[in-house]
Length: 223
Image (cartoon, rainbow, N blue to C red; front, side, top):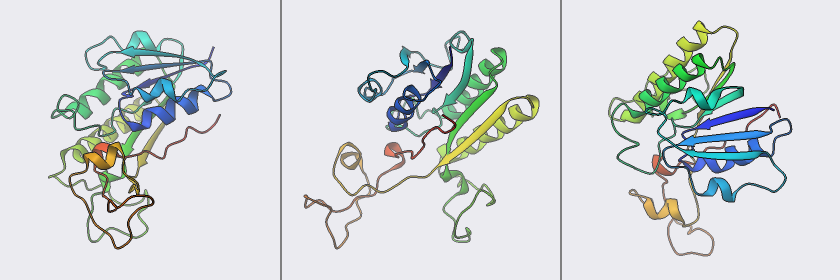
């Protein structure tokens, strides 16, 4: 049985990633471990897909390794900045989660690891190259702590990869997008940016979506 474990599935990425994995040929079981699983995770599942188990647990405090035995891969979504929850955004939380995931992956001999990071690690600098590619220098702004912690999480994943040369390690730097319709994310926005053209079927101006509501355009490949 091919099992994929998804940790940190509390943000908007979880719904699509878990559903894609459950529908992926060759995946028989998806194990979700999160302190607050996104309620859309189950709603997004299609009949006939893999078995999905959802465990409400803090990856930092729980014995995560017990969920990873016989896992073919581990996908960590905890790096996604989520929902402005003070507990999930506490200082050092992103790094602590990454460290816990890496320890458990090493203990369970997981040989496929995916970390979802963010393009925010590059920083919004005036001298950034255009287009911005992975060759660009990682320079997270000190004022945006989540980006600083994501960069540190990436560094630790890189070190883990060096220590486990037989493992396949992927870091995905997802980019935020702007929503043009009102909804949960738009209602949470703190920095509305009016435009000349209102979005479809509403008089509400197009609104900047903050990091708490980033949609992650990530679709697992290799299925």
